[in-house]
Image (cartoon, rainbow, N blue to C red; front, side, top):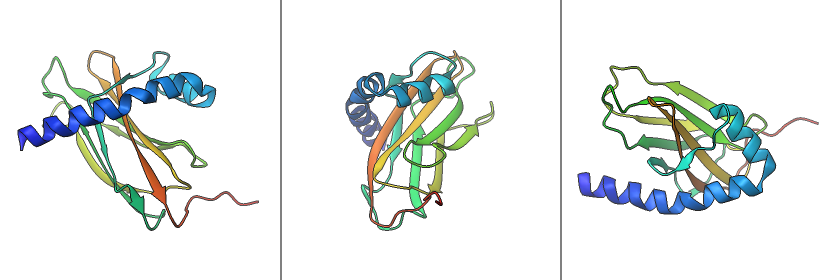
Length: 147
């Protein structure tokens, strides 16, 4: 199991590397990331975003976020933020992880308005930020704005 997790995290790190370059080329994404982190851009890696690549229904898309961390006093995840930039409200959820959390892992369902990347940010106890993402194709859209 440990080897599989390390493989998934390494694959996510490789897949997430272009995210930072994309963030620097897209002013809206850059502004959103800076607003959430308080200024610094997050580093790519350590965050696994697991969703099905194809979601039949955008009203309920399963998402699992796992952050590589020993969850010790010196190195632990304090917050996880889930973003879906093409939704009317791009910040989908914020989770605070207390000192008693043994693992930095969250499973939930989210609504997606369109084909897009689901991005997860993790704030560490040292103040640093990490990010990961995955692209989801949605066949039936949700979160549409009226008018």
